[in-house]
Each structure stands twice: as C-alpha cells, then as structure tokens.
Image (tube, rainbow, N blue to C red; front, side, top):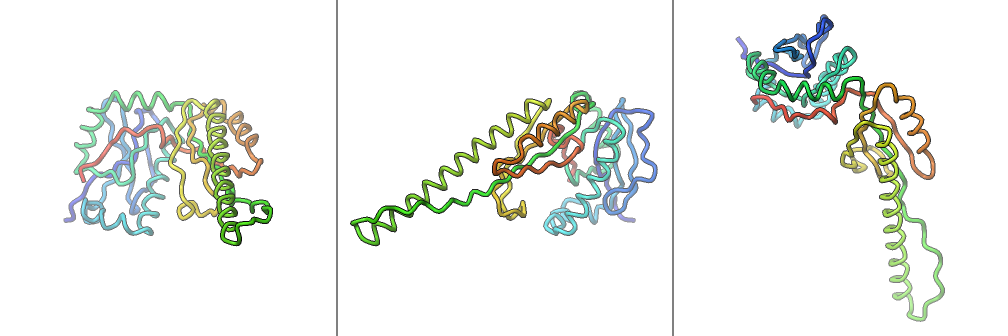
Length: 255
C-alpha cells in the first residue's frame, strides 16, 4: 500500500457552505475538509511517492508538472474563495496526515481568524505596468575638434545620460501608480518586478503590485486603473483573486 500524506490548499472559518462535493485538486485527487475548532482546512490525500519531500524536489524542476499542479491548487483555492473568506497556503504544502493539519488549526487558530477577518469582503487585484525604456537617439552633436574618438565618447555619454533619465522617470511613474492605487485599496504589496524572460514582454516592468480592495469599491478601483493608462505606460489588470498576497502565515508542511 502506498504511503499517503495530506495536501493542504487553504483554510476558512467553518460555515454551513463548507462542503466541496465534486471538487478535485492536485493530481486529480478528491478535495475534502478537516474541521477543527471553528476552522476548516481544505485538503486532499496524496501519494508520498509523488508528494514526499524527495519526489517534490525533483518535480519542482519540471515546469510542466509545476504548471499543472499550480493550476489545480489555484483552482481549488478560487472555488473555496467564491464561497467564503479564505486563507490560501503555499503550493505543495504537505503533512504526514490529518492529525498534523488539526494541530496546525489549533496552534495557529488566532492567526487564521485574524487573517480571515482581514480579508472578509475584500478581493485581491493585480496590476502590472510596462513602459518601453529604450533610450531615444541623442541629438546630433556639434562637430568636435577632438576627432572621431572624442566624438564617439561624447555620443556614448549622451546615450548613458538618456537611459539614466528614462529609468529615473520610470521609477517616478511606478511610485505614482502604486501610491494612487494604494489610496483606494485597504492594503497593498509591491512584488519584485519581473525581468523580460519571466514577463514575456520586451518592455520594462515598472510595477508588479497587488491590492486588497473592498468589494464595494471594485468599480472605483477599476476606474482608477483606467485613469492611469496612457502617457507611455501600458497597464495590465488581473483579478479578482483569492488574497494570496495578504494571507501568508508561513504555513509549511512536514516535507
């Protein structure tokens, strides 16, 4: 018989709608619940020959496996989030069994309750902003008496100054975007900007922000985002999502 573990997706407060009939998660496993002291953990039973510590170290280097597993994990979290405030946990958080999950709910009970009260009635929106920071060609300089070498150095210095100015302006734009959106949100978080290899864009990412917004202010937030478009900046909006950026309790499995 294959050894199994308990894969944890998220935690909510216990309600009459805490059931998950027909919901499937990672590796096609059935999602079930573990209630404890007014909280509910959403979990699956998973084989440790796939989700044990050593197999996971290998699997996490397989981008296809990682993408499929992340998609299944997030699907479960979003389904749960549609029903009640949710505290998602990190991808591939696996415990030795259900009793260890109950221990977590007992030991971190107050932390979970605080987080769930913080995100109740609120949703996370993601905003990324891009700009083409390719330096414009410097203006033609007056002929130099120093010869071709001096002219080349002056042109190079002008190009460097132009790129530096472009980055300064981009940094100022990023601050303005973030401050404006944060004024509408309950909480905000700036993730590290992705490089072009990760973002898939040739333009520089100025902002990679997450914003926790009252559901009643969604329309206001969306209008604020629209008002920030243009002026050489492309703004990308995603969401609403479960509040991943605002519920990290450093919950880790036994693996």
